[in-house]
Image (cartoon, rainbow, N blue to C red; front, side, top):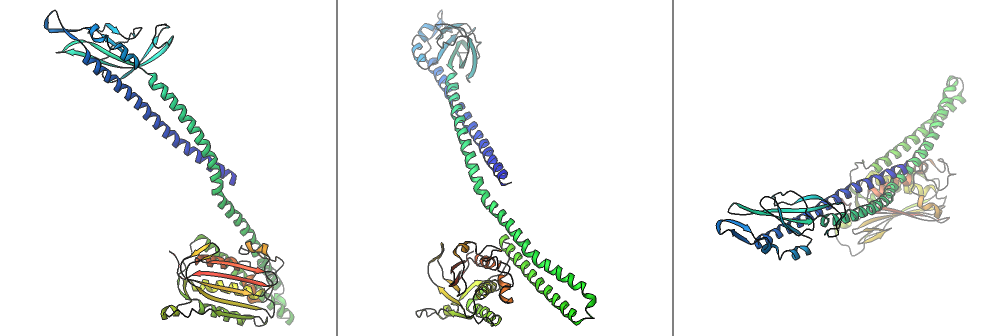
Length: 475
């Protein structure tokens, strides 16, 4: 499917470029051709003006009102000049009879008294004295004809001819050059279009692959609780008639309904997580941002987690890095750990991270949450922050994460150990880590706040998640 789409994109790129190049080449050709014709016409009219001024006009039989052109005196010096420029002259009597010509053979073309240039076609025979030496081939000439008159008396017609190959030869060469250039350009555009369409299709292909993986994972995650719900409901319905008769069956019935309730809650949470990620991906989320004191937020989250996991005997602590002693601004000190963000999303972010740390820490372990403010220009994993930002580190002494699993740690439904089940650990932490969406949601929230999250881990030593959030968001 993607190869066919890529092929169509490349064809469209090539076709559109070829049409544009053809239009451009046609415009260039017509412009150059019209320029050549205009130049020849200007040359012919210039020759007509020069020759017209050199004509020797004499009265006829001493009549003051009758004149004639002295042909020999008028054209004896013009033959050599026009020969060098491939221009031929013809002089005709007032009746149209050819009296003088630089051509070796008469053209036998009727006279048209038109100062605008015209193109004529002449078929010349095989003649050794022919100036153009084109046996039995059509000859194209560009001509300008000037009527010469004095006091309304027509003395004759002067016709100037120029070979048309002065236009056709460069025109053919231009067509060849343009065709060659267009051909090479179309081939280059075709290759570039194929390459660029492949690049353009890469995100689509990746999104499609992620969508397929997401669909498969979501189907798997949804199938398990739905199947368990159906099974428990079927058992409960089968034993419904025995509820009042046997206390044991009544207790079993109650347990089955509690299982259905837990599975329904888990299924609802999974759907809510998927809906949250879908809204973040589509950009339709309209969350409101306001001033959030991160110290108060973390105190609230840590306090909740401490109440939920007393049986594991894990030391959970919050460390707030004090501002430097040189800082004396009361307003800044009061808002030292305050940033612009969404309170509910940030609570969800750090609840997921702390719950993960508690979940994968063994009894007697330690989970430390540290909040610090970083001033000035800093770089975090290639991102450059020019204003102050808050940095939260969640460290544990748990089992750690293999190095090869770190690049995929934030993928949706990804688990480092597929053998782990949803019921590993207590119910509180399982709700944050069981679906495989906790870290994906955490990353989405951090990116939504224009921040960055990174992880460092060593097997058997523990894991540290570092969240960097800017104090103010860029518009």
